Length: 344
Image (cartoon, rainbow, N blue to C red; front, side):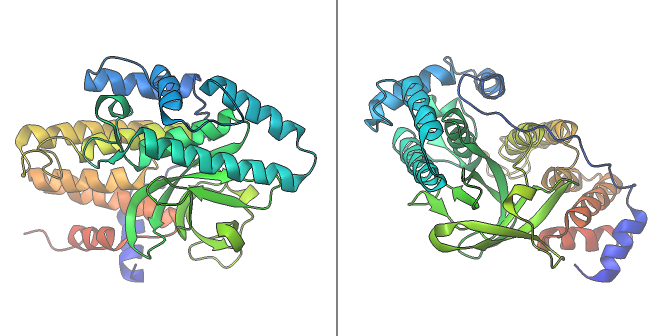
């Protein structure tokens, strides 16, 4: 981001928000958080059923047993016991890797279709066999947690193919029991372990764009915040909070709303569709005010609606968030240039 634009964004943007209180996301199957996320998805889509029942059936149908468990609950309980009983850190790490590979394969087999338009809804796992990066990562992290492992989610801004995006992907992350490092477990990839070098995660003082350092076997041994030289140990970072995850579900609903900001379903944006996107993006920001992606896209929706003054102010708010998190994507730089251009 050019220094002149960065200076202007900081000068004219509202004061930087205080770092939010961090709440870890316990996504274990049967737990309150995952139950609430799933119930919200079923309510919004109008699909009958529940995720817990689907997971139980999916485990049986996938024919991928774990730890000899006849049911999903038994399998995860047995794996938790095995991890506790493993006598060495190396054996615990081996079991953790094995569990990650199992969860990756289970989701890919049970939910065979990847869909950007509908797959983010957990209800569509059962309704149409569709998944997306956020939904699949939520469930994978939850399965790992239920097995007794430390796991969560991270946003991705640089993919393993080198593609840079505006936080355009989500992956689950497993922290090995030995403390040796992290593994990205991504069902969007053929194999269980991904190596996305750019992620967004919590560093104690707030969310930061990070560059991962990889060792053998895809193990992340350190993270370096963009713009800084000192690396952080994986233990110095945390996965996305529950508030951020909830916010991101609202973001994807806004992004994929029929006739909304992307014109999904109709091929073009409509008045009602854009208003739906506005409502859902505001919902996303109410849940997590530090969701820079949601803040940026809200400016774009207002610009599409012709609310140019609101759009300019919103782009400046988004710029302040990106600057505080250490990196401004190219698209947001263009938005910021427009926000600072003379009003016509």
